[in-house]
Amino acid sequence: MNILLSIAFVGAWSSGFIGAKLGSGSAPAVTLLMWRFLPLALVLGVIALIATRASWRGLTPRDLARQAAVGALSQSGYLLTVYYAIELGVSSGTTALIDGTQPLVAGALAGPLLGLPVSRTQWLGLGLGVAGVAVVTVADAGAGTGVAWWAYLVPFLGMLSLVAATFLDRRSRTDVRPMVSMTVHAVTSAVIFTALAAATGAVAPPASGSFWTAVVWLVVLSTFGGYGLYWLILRRSGVTKVNTLMFLMAPVTAVWGALMFGEPFGTQTVAGLALGLLAVAVVHRGDRHDHHSRHDHHDQGHDHDRGTPDCRQPADPEGVTPRRSA
Image (cartoon, rainbow, N blue to C red; front, side, top):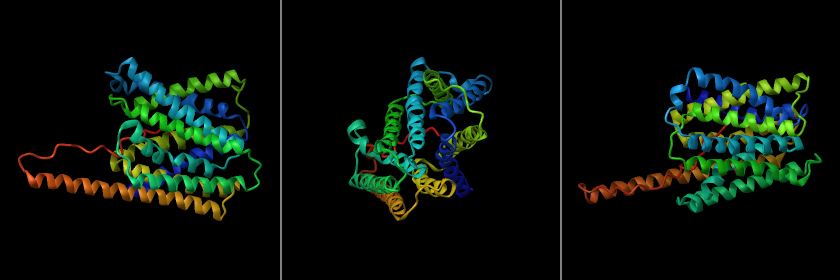
């Protein structure tokens, strides 16, 4: 069952990049995002009023404001840059790979920002991940697609927006239920994207069937499928499993984009994706080694003095994992 859930999760989450590509040719990014989040916010708002009132009890206006800020960064800022990059012509696989470096970047920044230890293995993994992004980006840019060089910086802004949301969320001491955070994030994004669409005169949706196909695709597969499976796997298997699966999004999206849209997928792309997967393997191998080392050290503390166990708790290396929004 876990294998089937993992496969479904990778497919559902990767579908977000493909859905963005589907809709990019028929409408501006803000139009697509507005019509993606308006019905989603309406449905979740009704559910919140009818079925999940208890989950909202005890939350202060400050808690809700923090969640709105997290949603503005993790959904609005992140998705707008992803969709805009794809609209500019950046391949879906390259965009997914840049997005996939988020856990590595967050882990590396955990030291200076949260005071958590950052191991040499994590820095090595970050270096490999960045190298993979560079190789794939160069391959994408050299494929003769005519994409401006600065368009490849746009997904990096989205990835950094997601990193900022991660640290803002992790500084909160209030445990917010997934359904509550999802509702607040969706309503926040609906307001932001509607305002942007109104300001740019892009509110009216096109009559093309491809646009509405992309909207349904994104709401059903990417949001409910990706987000729902994310939380299910997170509760069943833990953070490490989810982060590992996140790094499978780039190769799956790259293959999907090549088959569906004819996006470039040559030897350089394969090499860059391989470096990204190697980065994950290095980081998670190092995390397991560090975990066993701390566990052995903790046991030795008990052996020396059974009556006085070592109560010093190591910093959680997974404490900067985001509660991500699909």
